[in-house]
Image 1 (cartoon, rainbow, N blue to C red):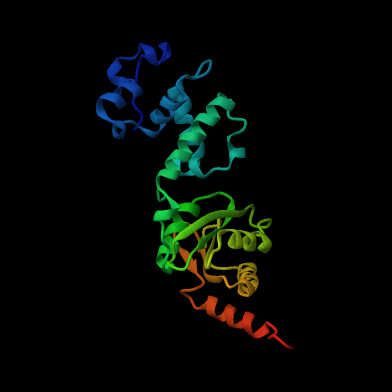
Image 2 (tube, rainbow, N blue to C red; image 1 turned 90 degrees about the horizontal axis):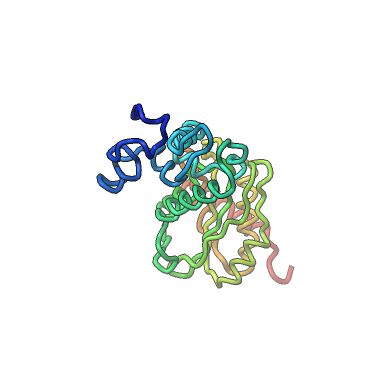
Length: 249
């Protein structure tokens, strides 16, 4: 519930200190401050006819939530009255810090050894994004994460990861295996025919260089799909091997 303050017309500096967002955060802790007030603290100042607090609440209302704000493409921030490049940069930096804080501290400490761990990892990276992102994690023989690469992003109709880029990353990192993951902004995690074809082509491209495709995970709004868990990865692998010419033929 929004706090009502009769001093707003005179600006935040005219409010009692106990009601100012920054002072309340310092005295009571960040948990006592609303989303809009946190944004106001980051913005520091408002614009003519609108306080930083009013602008903060307006941003929450426009995007719907902090999660939606965090996952919105940069283009969605253009044209918002009162937000110039400097303010947008401040907010983007803070939101990105929040996102990165949920990730493992270092790649050396990250291991992905089963499909459940892969799904959990990609949920953090991909859930809630407004555009489709295709990522690949490259692993060594014991499942340690060597690299996490964003291979492609865009609308559903335009995302088509380049296999040669994935292979180049695998060779450069000396990976023994990889797991692909992408999101479906529509919310459903069911694989499309294009997803199946891409997975088959990825297996075929990795086989000659000795890199095993362990899974392809699709992240939806409240669900995920694992090619490995459903057995589809094995089916596609068999198809690939059956269609690969043997030496001497």
